[in-house]
Image (cartoon, rainbow, N blue to C red; front, side):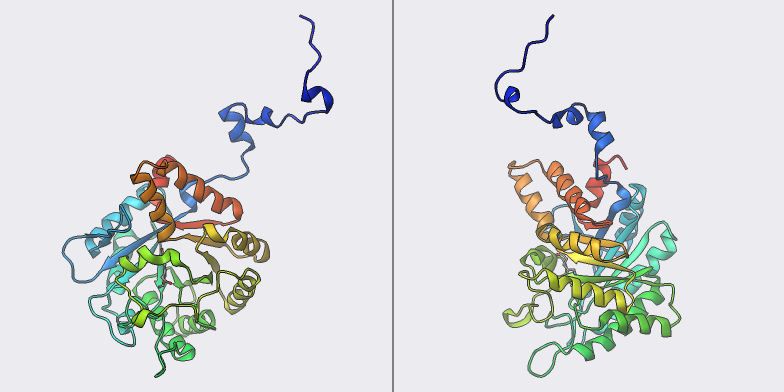
Length: 337
Ligand code: PBG
Protein backbone atom coordinates (compact mmCIF):
# COMPACT_ATOMS: atom_id res chain seq x y z
CA UNK A 1 0.00 0.00 0.00
CA UNK A 2 1.18 3.47 -0.87
CA UNK A 3 2.50 5.46 2.07
CA UNK A 4 0.28 8.38 2.94
CA UNK A 5 1.97 11.72 3.41
CA UNK A 6 2.00 12.76 7.09
CA UNK A 7 -0.79 14.99 8.14
CA UNK A 8 -1.24 17.64 10.77
CA UNK A 9 1.60 18.85 12.98
CA UNK A 10 4.07 16.18 11.82
CA UNK A 11 3.72 17.39 8.25
CA UNK A 12 4.75 20.91 9.16
CA UNK A 13 8.04 20.16 11.02
CA UNK A 14 10.33 17.13 11.42
CA UNK A 15 9.38 15.16 14.52
CA UNK A 16 12.15 13.58 16.56
CA UNK A 17 10.77 10.18 17.50
CA UNK A 18 11.68 9.87 21.22
CA UNK A 19 9.10 7.14 21.76
CA UNK A 20 10.99 4.53 19.69
CA UNK A 21 13.26 3.77 22.64
CA UNK A 22 10.36 3.54 25.09
CA UNK A 23 8.39 0.97 23.14
CA UNK A 24 9.14 -2.25 25.05
CA UNK A 25 10.28 -3.09 28.56
CA UNK A 26 13.51 -4.65 27.25
CA UNK A 27 14.23 -1.56 25.15
CA UNK A 28 13.70 0.61 28.24
CA UNK A 29 16.08 -1.60 30.19
CA UNK A 30 18.70 -1.28 27.48
CA UNK A 31 18.68 2.52 27.55
CA UNK A 32 18.16 3.09 31.30
CA UNK A 33 20.71 5.57 32.66
CA UNK A 34 20.19 4.60 36.30
CA UNK A 35 20.02 1.21 37.89
CA UNK A 36 19.07 0.37 41.43
CA UNK A 37 20.21 -2.81 43.14
CA UNK A 38 20.26 -4.09 46.71
CA UNK A 39 24.00 -3.28 46.61
CA UNK A 40 23.09 0.42 46.71
CA UNK A 41 21.12 0.20 49.97
CA UNK A 42 21.98 0.78 53.61
CA UNK A 43 19.38 -0.24 56.19
CA UNK A 44 19.01 1.89 59.34
CA UNK A 45 18.23 -0.16 62.47
CA UNK A 46 17.54 0.64 66.13
CA UNK A 47 18.59 -1.29 69.23
CA UNK A 48 17.14 -0.49 72.64
CA UNK A 49 18.59 -1.32 76.02
CA UNK A 50 16.55 -3.09 78.70
CA UNK A 51 13.73 -4.64 76.66
CA UNK A 52 12.82 -8.31 76.24
CA UNK A 53 10.75 -7.98 73.09
CA UNK A 54 11.07 -5.69 70.06
CA UNK A 55 8.98 -2.51 70.44
CA UNK A 56 7.16 -1.26 67.31
CA UNK A 57 7.82 2.37 66.33
CA UNK A 58 4.35 3.83 65.77
CA UNK A 59 5.38 6.54 63.32
CA UNK A 60 7.57 4.21 61.23
CA UNK A 61 5.48 1.28 59.99
CA UNK A 62 7.49 -1.93 59.73
CA UNK A 63 10.25 -0.69 62.04
CA UNK A 64 10.94 -1.62 65.66
CA UNK A 65 13.35 -0.89 68.46
CA UNK A 66 15.23 -4.18 68.53
CA UNK A 67 16.58 -6.26 71.37
CA UNK A 68 20.17 -7.33 70.72
CA UNK A 69 18.91 -10.81 69.78
CA UNK A 70 16.22 -9.59 67.38
CA UNK A 71 18.74 -7.17 65.85
CA UNK A 72 21.08 -10.03 65.02
CA UNK A 73 18.20 -11.90 63.33
CA UNK A 74 17.23 -8.78 61.40
CA UNK A 75 20.81 -8.23 60.26
CA UNK A 76 21.00 -11.81 58.96
CA UNK A 77 17.71 -11.26 57.14
CA UNK A 78 18.97 -8.03 55.55
CA UNK A 79 22.18 -9.78 54.46
CA UNK A 80 20.11 -12.59 52.92
CA UNK A 81 18.29 -9.96 50.84
CA UNK A 82 21.62 -8.84 49.41
CA UNK A 83 21.86 -5.59 51.37
CA UNK A 84 25.53 -4.89 52.09
CA UNK A 85 25.32 -2.53 55.06
CA UNK A 86 23.33 -1.41 58.06
CA UNK A 87 23.58 1.77 60.11
CA UNK A 88 23.00 1.28 63.81
CA UNK A 89 21.36 3.65 66.30
CA UNK A 90 21.16 3.01 70.03
CA UNK A 91 18.39 3.79 72.50
CA UNK A 92 19.86 3.70 76.02
CA UNK A 93 17.71 3.19 79.13
CA UNK A 94 19.34 6.07 80.99
CA UNK A 95 20.55 9.45 79.76
CA UNK A 96 22.75 12.11 81.36
CA UNK A 97 23.99 15.63 80.62
CA UNK A 98 27.13 14.39 78.84
CA UNK A 99 25.69 11.41 77.01
CA UNK A 100 28.18 9.03 78.61
CA UNK A 101 26.25 5.94 77.45
CA UNK A 102 27.59 6.69 73.99
CA UNK A 103 31.18 5.72 74.87
CA UNK A 104 30.50 3.22 77.68
CA UNK A 105 31.95 -0.16 76.57
CA UNK A 106 28.77 -1.71 78.01
CA UNK A 107 26.54 0.87 76.32
CA UNK A 108 23.77 -0.54 74.17
CA UNK A 109 25.43 0.09 70.81
CA UNK A 110 28.76 -1.36 71.85
CA UNK A 111 27.07 -4.52 73.17
CA UNK A 112 25.06 -4.83 69.94
CA UNK A 113 28.13 -4.27 67.73
CA UNK A 114 30.05 -7.04 69.46
CA UNK A 115 27.13 -9.44 68.93
CA UNK A 116 26.68 -8.44 65.30
CA UNK A 117 30.36 -8.84 64.59
CA UNK A 118 30.58 -12.26 66.19
CA UNK A 119 27.36 -13.54 64.56
CA UNK A 120 27.80 -12.05 61.09
CA UNK A 121 31.53 -11.78 60.54
CA UNK A 122 31.98 -9.63 57.45
CA UNK A 123 28.60 -10.49 55.91
CA UNK A 124 27.41 -6.94 56.56
CA UNK A 125 29.25 -3.65 56.75
CA UNK A 126 28.54 -2.36 60.24
CA UNK A 127 28.11 1.40 60.17
CA UNK A 128 27.49 3.08 63.50
CA UNK A 129 25.84 6.47 63.85
CA UNK A 130 28.10 8.59 66.05
CA UNK A 131 26.30 11.28 68.03
CA UNK A 132 25.32 12.16 71.56
CA UNK A 133 21.66 13.12 71.16
CA UNK A 134 20.25 9.67 71.96
CA UNK A 135 22.31 9.67 75.15
CA UNK A 136 21.94 13.22 76.50
CA UNK A 137 19.07 14.13 78.82
CA UNK A 138 18.66 17.48 76.99
CA UNK A 139 18.56 15.85 73.53
CA UNK A 140 21.26 17.97 71.90
CA UNK A 141 24.02 16.45 69.78
CA UNK A 142 26.74 17.72 72.09
CA UNK A 143 27.52 18.90 75.60
CA UNK A 144 26.14 22.26 76.69
CA UNK A 145 27.66 25.46 77.97
CA UNK A 146 25.99 27.08 81.00
CA UNK A 147 23.94 29.25 78.61
CA UNK A 148 22.44 26.14 77.00
CA UNK A 149 24.27 26.37 73.66
CA UNK A 150 26.28 23.42 72.38
CA UNK A 151 30.01 23.63 73.16
CA UNK A 152 31.72 22.59 69.91
CA UNK A 153 35.22 21.71 71.09
CA UNK A 154 34.20 20.05 74.34
CA UNK A 155 31.88 17.89 72.23
CA UNK A 156 34.73 16.87 69.90
CA UNK A 157 36.56 15.22 72.78
CA UNK A 158 33.49 13.11 73.54
CA UNK A 159 33.11 12.19 69.87
CA UNK A 160 36.68 10.88 69.88
CA UNK A 161 35.82 8.65 72.85
CA UNK A 162 32.62 7.41 71.16
CA UNK A 163 34.49 6.58 67.94
CA UNK A 164 37.09 4.59 69.85
CA UNK A 165 34.42 2.68 71.80
CA UNK A 166 32.51 1.85 68.62
CA UNK A 167 35.66 0.76 66.79
CA UNK A 168 36.73 -1.37 69.78
CA UNK A 169 33.32 -3.05 69.64
CA UNK A 170 33.63 -3.93 65.96
CA UNK A 171 32.31 -1.05 63.82
CA UNK A 172 33.62 -1.02 60.24
CA UNK A 173 32.53 2.57 59.75
CA UNK A 174 31.65 5.37 62.16
CA UNK A 175 29.22 8.00 60.96
CA UNK A 176 29.36 11.29 62.84
CA UNK A 177 25.97 13.05 62.54
CA UNK A 178 26.31 15.93 65.01
CA UNK A 179 27.51 18.65 62.59
CA UNK A 180 30.17 19.98 64.98
CA UNK A 181 33.01 21.85 63.28
CA UNK A 182 36.14 19.72 63.09
CA UNK A 183 34.38 16.48 64.03
CA UNK A 184 35.86 14.38 61.25
CA UNK A 185 39.43 15.42 62.02
CA UNK A 186 38.96 14.86 65.74
CA UNK A 187 37.50 11.41 65.16
CA UNK A 188 40.18 10.42 62.65
CA UNK A 189 42.95 11.29 65.08
CA UNK A 190 41.24 9.54 68.00
CA UNK A 191 40.78 6.39 65.89
CA UNK A 192 44.38 6.45 64.65
CA UNK A 193 45.75 6.96 68.15
CA UNK A 194 43.77 3.96 69.33
CA UNK A 195 45.19 1.80 66.53
CA UNK A 196 42.01 1.84 64.43
CA UNK A 197 43.49 3.10 61.16
CA UNK A 198 41.31 0.57 59.31
CA UNK A 199 38.01 2.01 60.54
CA UNK A 200 36.40 4.31 57.97
CA UNK A 201 34.46 7.54 58.49
CA UNK A 202 31.16 8.24 56.74
CA UNK A 203 30.63 11.94 57.43
CA UNK A 204 27.14 13.36 57.63
CA UNK A 205 28.70 16.26 55.76
CA UNK A 206 25.74 18.25 54.45
CA UNK A 207 23.07 17.68 57.07
CA UNK A 208 20.22 20.12 57.18
CA UNK A 209 18.05 21.29 60.08
CA UNK A 210 15.00 19.49 58.70
CA UNK A 211 11.45 18.91 59.88
CA UNK A 212 11.66 15.48 58.24
CA UNK A 213 13.41 13.87 61.23
CA UNK A 214 10.22 13.75 63.32
CA UNK A 215 9.54 9.99 63.25
CA UNK A 216 13.22 9.25 63.98
CA UNK A 217 13.05 11.24 67.19
CA UNK A 218 10.16 8.97 68.26
CA UNK A 219 12.26 5.96 67.33
CA UNK A 220 15.14 7.00 69.58
CA UNK A 221 13.03 8.70 72.30
CA UNK A 222 14.70 12.08 71.83
CA UNK A 223 13.04 15.36 72.74
CA UNK A 224 15.12 18.52 72.52
CA UNK A 225 14.91 20.41 75.81
CA UNK A 226 12.84 23.59 76.15
CA UNK A 227 11.41 23.45 72.66
CA UNK A 228 14.94 23.80 71.26
CA UNK A 229 16.11 22.93 67.79
CA UNK A 230 19.34 22.14 65.97
CA UNK A 231 19.62 25.26 63.82
CA UNK A 232 22.78 26.30 65.65
CA UNK A 233 24.69 23.36 64.18
CA UNK A 234 22.76 21.80 61.29
CA UNK A 235 22.57 23.60 57.94
CA UNK A 236 19.91 26.08 56.90
CA UNK A 237 17.64 24.55 54.20
CA UNK A 238 17.92 27.79 52.22
CA UNK A 239 21.62 27.20 51.50
CA UNK A 240 23.06 25.20 48.64
CA UNK A 241 26.66 26.39 48.13
CA UNK A 242 27.37 26.08 51.85
CA UNK A 243 27.02 22.31 51.45
CA UNK A 244 30.09 22.27 49.21
CA UNK A 245 32.11 24.02 51.91
CA UNK A 246 30.95 21.50 54.53
CA UNK A 247 31.78 18.56 52.27
CA UNK A 248 35.20 19.95 51.29
CA UNK A 249 36.11 20.38 54.95
CA UNK A 250 35.07 16.84 55.81
CA UNK A 251 37.03 15.35 52.93
CA UNK A 252 40.09 17.41 53.91
CA UNK A 253 39.75 16.20 57.50
CA UNK A 254 39.75 12.58 56.34
CA UNK A 255 36.18 11.53 55.52
CA UNK A 256 36.20 8.31 53.48
CA UNK A 257 32.59 8.82 52.37
CA UNK A 258 30.22 11.73 52.68
CA UNK A 259 26.47 12.03 53.11
CA UNK A 260 23.75 14.48 52.15
CA UNK A 261 20.72 14.43 54.43
CA UNK A 262 17.74 14.51 53.91
CA UNK A 263 17.68 13.28 50.31
CA UNK A 264 14.61 14.14 48.25
CA UNK A 265 14.27 17.81 49.09
CA UNK A 266 18.04 18.17 48.58
CA UNK A 267 18.67 16.47 45.23
CA UNK A 268 20.34 19.65 43.97
CA UNK A 269 22.84 19.25 46.80
CA UNK A 270 23.33 15.54 46.05
CA UNK A 271 24.10 16.42 42.42
CA UNK A 272 26.49 19.23 43.37
CA UNK A 273 28.36 17.07 45.87
CA UNK A 274 28.63 14.12 43.48
CA UNK A 275 30.29 16.42 40.96
CA UNK A 276 32.59 18.06 43.49
CA UNK A 277 34.24 15.14 45.31
CA UNK A 278 35.90 11.85 44.43
CA UNK A 279 34.77 9.89 47.50
CA UNK A 280 31.51 7.88 47.55
CA UNK A 281 28.46 10.06 48.12
CA UNK A 282 25.59 8.67 50.14
CA UNK A 283 22.21 10.22 50.75
CA UNK A 284 19.89 9.61 53.68
CA UNK A 285 16.25 9.11 52.74
CA UNK A 286 15.14 9.99 56.25
CA UNK A 287 12.36 8.88 58.54
CA UNK A 288 9.88 11.58 57.49
CA UNK A 289 10.40 10.81 53.82
CA UNK A 290 9.69 7.14 54.47
CA UNK A 291 6.74 7.66 56.78
CA UNK A 292 5.01 10.08 54.40
CA UNK A 293 5.02 7.39 51.74
CA UNK A 294 3.73 4.78 54.21
CA UNK A 295 0.98 7.04 55.54
CA UNK A 296 -0.32 7.92 52.08
CA UNK A 297 -0.10 4.28 50.98
CA UNK A 298 -2.06 3.12 54.04
CA UNK A 299 -4.86 5.48 52.98
CA UNK A 300 -4.76 4.01 49.50
CA UNK A 301 -3.77 7.36 48.01
CA UNK A 302 -0.56 6.17 46.38
CA UNK A 303 1.12 2.86 45.54
CA UNK A 304 3.72 2.83 48.33
CA UNK A 305 6.11 0.34 46.72
CA UNK A 306 6.11 2.18 43.40
CA UNK A 307 6.69 5.55 45.06
CA UNK A 308 9.49 4.18 47.22
CA UNK A 309 11.18 2.75 44.14
CA UNK A 310 10.76 6.03 42.27
CA UNK A 311 12.11 8.08 45.16
CA UNK A 312 15.21 6.00 45.75
CA UNK A 313 15.90 5.71 42.01
CA UNK A 314 15.73 9.51 41.81
CA UNK A 315 18.26 9.82 44.64
CA UNK A 316 20.65 7.57 42.70
CA UNK A 317 19.95 9.45 39.47
CA UNK A 318 20.98 12.67 41.21
CA UNK A 319 24.39 11.13 41.89
CA UNK A 320 24.28 9.12 45.11
CA UNK A 321 26.46 6.01 45.23
CA UNK A 322 24.39 4.48 48.03
CA UNK A 323 21.15 5.37 49.80
CA UNK A 324 20.33 4.96 53.47
CA UNK A 325 16.62 4.16 53.53
CA UNK A 326 14.05 2.63 55.85
CA UNK A 327 12.64 1.02 52.72
CA UNK A 328 15.83 -1.03 52.18
CA UNK A 329 14.27 -4.43 52.90
CA UNK A 330 11.13 -3.74 50.84
CA UNK A 331 13.20 -2.41 47.95
CA UNK A 332 15.60 -5.35 48.02
CA UNK A 333 12.58 -7.65 47.79
CA UNK A 334 11.06 -5.62 44.94
CA UNK A 335 14.41 -5.69 43.14
CA UNK A 336 14.46 -9.45 43.44
CA UNK A 337 17.18 -9.69 46.08
C1 PBG B 1 21.31 12.52 65.07
C2 PBG B 1 20.57 11.92 63.93
C3 PBG B 1 19.29 12.25 63.50
C4 PBG B 1 19.00 11.43 62.41
C5 PBG B 1 20.11 10.61 62.21
N1 PBG B 1 21.09 10.94 63.16
C6 PBG B 1 18.30 13.18 64.06
C7 PBG B 1 18.57 14.60 64.17
O1 PBG B 1 19.53 15.15 63.64
O2 PBG B 1 17.77 15.24 64.85
C8 PBG B 1 17.72 11.46 61.63
C9 PBG B 1 17.43 10.29 60.79
C10 PBG B 1 16.05 10.19 60.27
O3 PBG B 1 15.19 11.07 60.41
O4 PBG B 1 15.78 9.14 59.69
N2 PBG B 1 21.91 11.55 65.87
